[in-house]
Length: 127
Image 1 (spheres, rainbow, N blue to C red):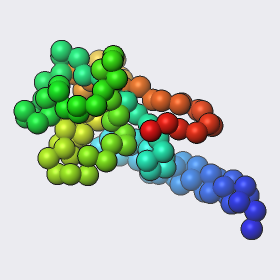
Image 2 (cartoon, rainbow, N blue to C red; image 1 turned 30 degrees about the vertical axis):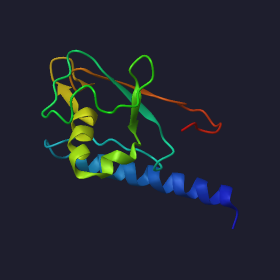
Image 3 (cartoon, one colour; image 1 turned 45 degrees about the horizontal axis):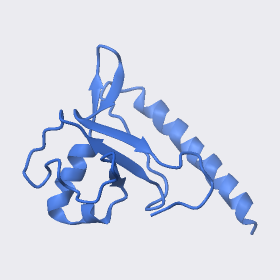
């Protein structure tokens, strides 16, 4: 079977499921945002912590992770250390999004800035 045709069929099926799910969800008042992260480790999301960031533990403080670029950016997704229990909480705090009903919009956790690397880029990713 043609792999290109398989991808097209999968994309159409995914879109149909998403439309159906949205239609069902719109009938309830208990809506929650869903963040879809396609793929696994190939996507790259970086974060930078500002002085406004307040962690819940010393382990999650601004010095973790140790490996950062000169501007303070570090790999948030996918960083394999999040698989270890103590760091899962740090990851959760930094990936959390908050809803502001006054402006009807979502924003990052206080003190967490994020950016997507190679957004819509088809070339090889760097690690």
